[in-house]
Image (cartoon, rainbow, N blue to C red):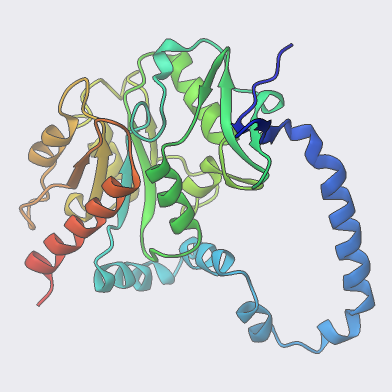
Length: 290
């Protein structure tokens, strides 16, 4: 079976996931021995000191995962900084480069394309087709994972055409990564209770439909309990203006506003990501900050 590779200049920059094994084992063994050698020093550290030494992305993830008394504080963080409470992504031709209805095979980890420099899965393979996140999507998930938007959470609103298309999309989310071992699916799960999937509205099988304003967003509103005007929605809008429909039809009664929107006709780029955040913040300051 042929292997799909990503190249840089004249040589291959990617290799199969299996090649990680030996490197990982060596690194783990070294870490264990080094940790054992310095065990006495580590025991003297206080828990607060340990937390301050965590990688910034882990601190961010821990903050977003607080789901009890910290919900109100997290929402205050979001409001004070002008961040959306819920960032909603269409998938096909927006979050990533492919249309799932055109594919026929579930993505398997053995076929993943891994970037040699970052050791990260950058391509999930369905048949002969490679599914890749757009650069704005990768930036969005990476920044969120690193804790840059405390109080925000992530969701999807995708009207994938068939049950098979839904399964292929879900398998792509499980395989694509923003850093080694950190899948897109795991980033979407941050902040929600374990096993909760109400933020992942993918497909058009009832109760979903092709009309996101009538099904996907009302369901997101119900399951997440986040008001429409505190949402930010990205959609390519190449098959219909979902952004306009959601903005005009999913209106929060008291606020009189629907979700902030950003069209991505060429996929979610870095510019669209940053522009949308700026637009949301400006609207928030205009209507809700005194």
